[in-house]
Amino acid sequence: MFFKQFIVKGMGCLSYLIGCPMARQAVVVDPKRDVQDYLDVARDKGMQITHVFETHIHADHVSGNQELRSRTGAEIYFMEGTPVKFDHKEVTENDVLEFGKVRLRFMKTPGHTPHSMSILVTDLSRAQEPWFVLTGDCLFVGDVGRPDLAGQELLDEQIKNLYDSLHNKLETLGPNMEIYPAHGEGSLCGKGMSSKPNSTIGFEMAHVPLLKMSFEDFHREMTSQFPERPKSFTHIIGINTEGPPLLERCPVVRDLSPFQVKKSMDEGAVILDTRDTAAFGGVHIPGSINIGLGPQTANWIGHVIEPESELILVVTGEDAYHEMTKQLHRIGYDNITGYLYGGITAWQEAGLPIEHLWQISASKLYEKLKSGSYGHFFDVRTKIEWEAGHIKEAKHLPLNELLKNIPDIPRDEEVIVTCAVGYRGNIAASFLQRHGFQHVHSLAGGMKAWINAGFPVER
Image 1: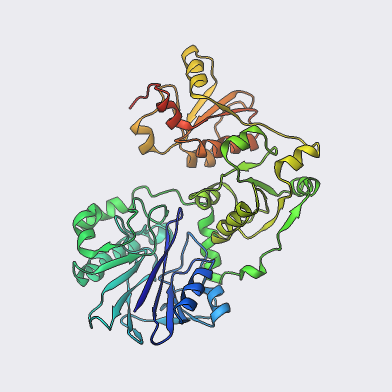
Image 2 (image 1 turned 120 degrees about the vertical axis):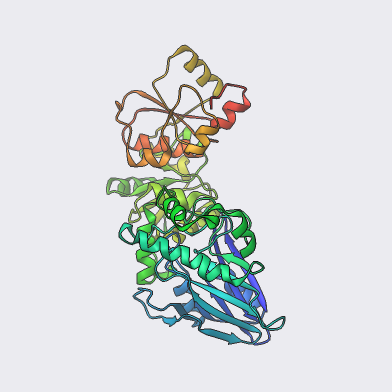
């Protein structure tokens, strides 16, 4: 049997190719939208992808099931009753698929979504009993799936389903059963996933506090706060329910002159500037949003920008452009109409308006705080980060809260923001500039720079 895990770093999406080179056949489970990796591996091993299995309707990334069907003819399968609206086939509890030395058995494990499933995998060249289980979003390494995405009206039912799936289905597989989930570190589908890509049932049952709780305690914990649901989740669920459009049908991206970009801006386009914090701070297009290209880019775009927005990119080069469009397509932000040809230099040379986001050094900020000559100072990190150490004069305003509720302060007063290293600070600062704040600064290097400079923190 051939088995390979694929990881989308930052988003924490995990997908799988399982095949039998002898039978020249393979299946893909929970594919990402850009599917070339699966095609390359299958071709290299002399296998044809014949089936695509979705453990559930995903909320955090657009599926590649339509891309794979278009390019291989593979059939798409869900657990029975899954409310997708495109042509597909269904499996039911304990259905079995065998090809070559591979056996797959399907289990209903609802809780994350009402129709979630897990897949037991047996390598018949080694044994007749299952070797490992693909747990979808039911059981992660270090965490369990969040049950709130199906809606508040189903939350109690989903919590009960999740508890039953964990203990009456997965736990009964035995402590030595290996697990491979659909998500890992960086995903917003849970609270505290490990960076380790796989584990065992026994280890998770022994060391994940949620799995040792009574149902009453589990219910209490599952009705507490989860990671903020990005704007993109509802959009992605809709796309995955209807059937994702093929990437070849997405708008043709054009290289745009500065004046074409200006015209599109005037008509409502959003400028997404993907450069680093220092470059954006030096000069940028007024009203643009700075979300630098990095592992968590897609998650933050999902929080900040409306999914239907027309996007124009400011990038540092062709490689950055292709990487950013790939990340945007993964979360269903397909309305990318172009990029600024020649970059910000071309914009400046055209004589069009520019704006600055001044980066304030740790030493300069220290002097301002010491003398009391500052306006409003916000720390946009998470609660856990804040409690681990913060600047005395700062007010805690997590970025997710700031994005939902713009501070009710005069737009002409000074605002300083900080985060861990400056990335989220620049997102917050550019967002505030876009909403009319005239004197915004970001702490260069964030709290890392402040601490390295030897300045005090409180806990």
